[in-house]
Image (cartoon, rainbow, N blue to C red; front, side, top):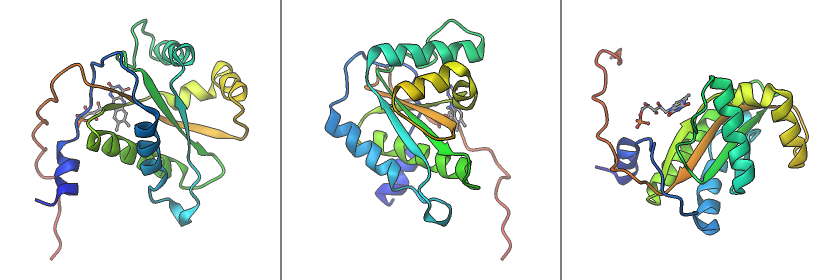
Length: 173
Ligand SMILES: Cc1cc2nc3c(=O)[nH]c(=O)nc-3n(C[C@H](O)[C@H](O)[C@H](O)COP(=O)(O)O)c2cc1C
């Protein structure tokens, strides 16, 4: 099988991480793969906020947990959070941002790094606290939260994928 297709089939979400930080060169490579995602009219509107700072990571975790009504760490202990945000003035922003998320997760997997899409970025960055955090980080503009791609080295075995549901493809030949 073609190795890219095989990688797409073998990527799995990770929900248990080691504490170890990922080297910056590896993060840069993963982020660059995200930036190469296709985007509507090639506008490249999504941006990525790469959080390796533990205090900010924990702050995000708390905001995300409260959006979910939980007290547990929704990032499963992952030390890195890549927040994908997309420009609200671009019509295809959610599609563009989602594709960036997909690239990030695949690139991480290709480098032997675990990842998981953590949701509620929209709610998080609609809140005053979320907006204030972006401002503090020097991010100006009207952005919608698309997702958090949490990253770290796996502390579990990669799970076997759930079987693919049937009857999801309709051919017209
Ligand atoms: C839009 C979206 C939102 C998701 N949100 C969460 C989340 O908040 N927490 C979580 O643990 N997993 C989340 N996931 C991961 C899915 O649960 C996961 O992709 C799915 O169970 C299939 O498993 P796999 O990624 O290993 O193939 C999300 C995935 C997507 C695409």
